[in-house]
Image (cartoon, rainbow, N blue to C red; front, side, top):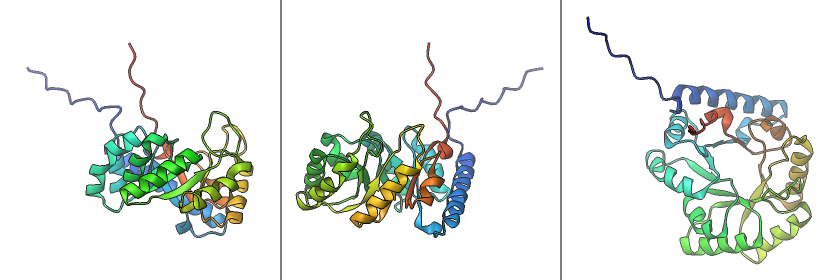
Length: 242
């Protein structure tokens, strides 16, 4: 008797569309509950699904489940991953959320709908020039380094007002809002509250703050965008080592 062939083992790194859809549903329910607890309309909070390092198939699964807004750290990865997806899902929106080099500004302006990591004068100048050359203007958020962490991108708190003026007056940039990433291990609430108060003083409506571990606290403080990755897509398997 000849043994029947065994089915192929599933690829442990392959995206699971059902799991991604279920994770999205759970996160959206938590966002709605957090908004309602804060007396806010859940529709006022946008979920940015952070798809960095995850393949296009994972993004496609999220798009099929109704998610439209995605965040990528690296412009090169976004440029490789998203043009084909846009052809299938033209309503999708892409945020660049990672530190941006000035020599990648034009690529970012070309591919992104929102750039969240504007944080220094040279980058403001490069983005302004790229907007003129490309004829399109993504929404722009200024990243504030609320924890004064030397290893992290973002303009310092005490320089943020002057930087906003320079962006508007010297470079002609329309700034939509602010973004922050509180220090890991610290209570994020003081950082979220400071950013919300500063945004109100500056007349800015968009607040991108809160990630997988703290987005509910961010919503309570007024976040209009939350960036969630691992709670939707899971952790990507590490490459095998010899």
